[in-house]
Image (tube, rainbow, N blue to C red; front, side, top):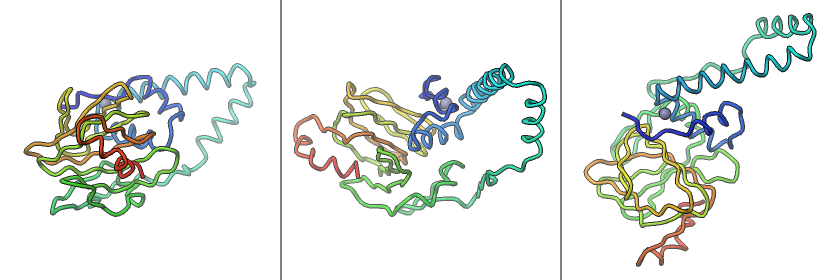
Length: 221
Ligand SMILES: [Zn+2]
């Protein structure tokens, strides 16, 4: 059961096309996995359409409105059909993961897997913009040293379970953390595949992990 969702404000920005490409990918992938956010974003889109249509209708005469509607309904969609290939999986460490449709459609943006340290693996997702977006794979028993964020870190659990000082998170959970929140994600018995985007490097905060601060560029490259 998904318990951590994007805020309604973020869903509104998503539907309005105001989010960065990286954050759009994160929110769209969550929506793929979350019936509740599918309903909310459909309502938001309906509301936005009505609002825009009312604005246009207030300015245009009847013929202009009729022409626009005729053009919309006669034109073929310029969007390719969603390619929801059931074979769209990624494999790592002998595990196979199904990608949600939005991520599967962007599979060509996923780079090679690199071993970061310990039980952590990373594959960059090339989506443009200032953010750094990666698939992060945590083997069972992995720990990311405690850190804060200079900017915002958004994490979506694609498959598996991880926990931090605040809670534990499962498939579909969407977590946003800002600079005020320190945390140290870890897995125990189960492994975890997440999609994560950062808009600034991590800042490691405690003990020996401070020595890792130069290493934070590994999380942000
Ligand atoms: Zn949701």
